[in-house]
Image (cartoon, rainbow, N blue to C red; front, side, top):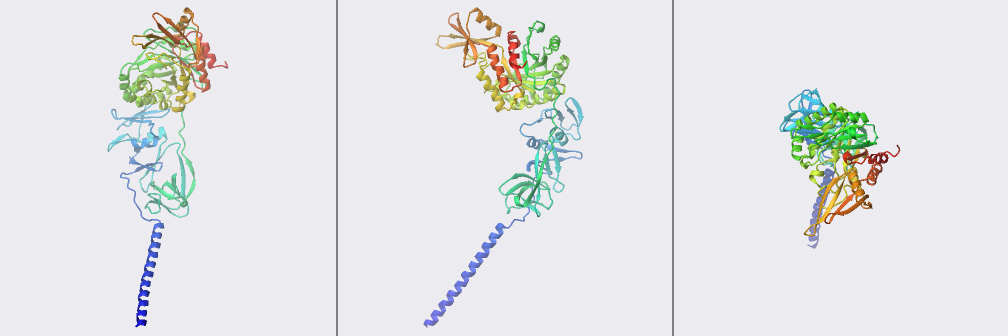
Length: 575
């Protein structure tokens, strides 16, 4: 009995052991299979779905749009062109006139939807395909983009995918190291593949990740390949566009010494001018925007132009917006009015044999910032074609909308030859506090901000200096506050005041200028921060310190005869 019980127990334990063993084996097999399947690369194919024919790629990324393949030409959507060329877009579409304007440093191309006739500069040209609208998108012919920006396109036969590259792009090339490679949808061997690249297949590497490359395959699909599966074969640089430098009437490196000549209702008689030693450019305020249709009022004078030529002085005539924000908004908003202004300036320049145009737009709304940039982009190539120098006047940076914020200095400097920093009106005419028109620390800070924050090249920056100052009058009023008023005066008037009142100027360390004050009438204190040889020399020294392009002065009528030799000798110490 005991033996039987004992035997039966051993049998039951033996069966249980076998069951446990089988479970262990199954577990091992399952674990091994799970590990195997986890490490086993996926061979699942996931066909890319782009939702459009001829999907467009740039830098290995799908641009969420497709190209149109016409019989003679490829057309690209405006959004894709924006992605390729960047946010500072030299491609402009204006729905009102259905116009597309392409600009680079030397060319302007104007096209219209559904029209084969276009204009390159002022010359008519025939397009191989017309711009068009399709499914709510505007499409631009590739040939136009190629000629101005060096954009090229290739179409993969197998997929129809379109790959864009542009002049100056650098491409890293690769091929499968040993055998065909799977280009996967994500950087994981368990993700499905979107393209299979055979041995000898050419891939472009766009990005290096942890153990992976982001690539574009022979069929143009973008995805990921493990690094150890590829062999890098070298880099390829797309030939940069050749920069067409304009032939301008100005010797490189020559310092600009310009003075503005303010023209009001009466014509100037330059035959009565005293000698202006060293001045090599005058900018008479001849041209002004007169209405929103782009009409320009001219006060140009052939006798003045002849006088300047006889003196060997160039004329960079000033074109202003009349400081009227309403007419400026209207004139800049439309391509037709912008090109009307440009054509008028070209006609005036030819008639009066000018060497340049100086743009002075002030009191402009920030909403018109981009339109002003566009106008200058369109203006400069056409003026350059005519051999004209283009300059623009800008204020120091501040938070004032109409005085400063409307100026995109970084964008504007790309199109102009010179940028004149109007480094004055630190304390403006109606300032509640008396002070210098242009203290040296404020001037230096203003120019440094343009150099550092807006990437304005020193070789293009002209420091504009005041020849005027303000007599500040302070008077205590009934509420014990101080009423401040001012009036602008030139250098000679300040000299007269100092002489007549037998004043002795003192040097103001804070502004780096000479200063006088005096009392007149019933408790009125007058203060003058003087513009003279001391202040002018210190500003010209900044030109050398930062290797700027030169100086300009506002305005000739405020000058004293002796200031011109001071500027000339300080600007050109070797002469």
